[in-house]
Image 1 (cartoon, rainbow, N blue to C red):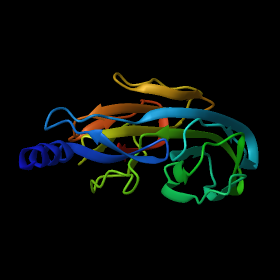
Image 2 (image 1 turned 30 degrees about the horizontal axis):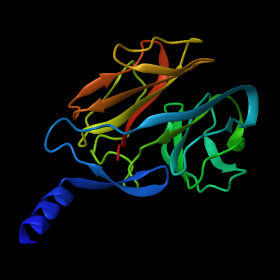
Image 3 (image 1 turned 180 degrees about the vertical axis):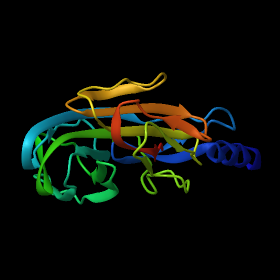
Image 4 (image 1 turned 60 degrees about the vertical axis):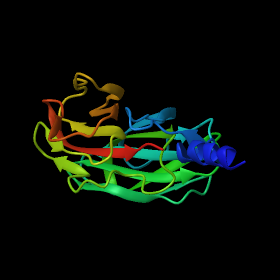
Length: 226
């Protein structure tokens, strides 16, 4: 019996509690090997408007407990607030400088045609994209490195991370209609003076540099995996 209990204890020690589809589960840890990145894209909705005071992307997701992100580029007026038909609670992560902003919320259930209303302080040209991420940490969702979120009005921005398994995101307000997706990154949208690119990593970043050449401003951030 003692041997059985010892074996059970050793097995439980290798399990890590994580959220999956809105349910707390026990997952096998990497045992000191390469960290596992559980984050996956779960729905996107982009909206570009000529000069106006609001944008209304509509987002549908498939997973409960998704981390919802709204990324914005604008010419002259930042976002005053966000609301949506699902009644989520929205928080500004970064913005009001360098023509880019990022807001986030957590959706306890999957979203179906959720109309997200992004309101600007005044009329401005803007491009907005909303997207869902599954597999994000249940709390402390952003990497704690002091360099984040980073922002710049130059061609590149530099940042480091403290967590290995991250979803890296780079939002760029372009001075031309489209930009160039950087090597190793994946473009989520690249149109109407906005480039949003992302990268899934399993190692910490030190002095990482990202950004297209033709931009008015940009920001970079890192979201933590389960």
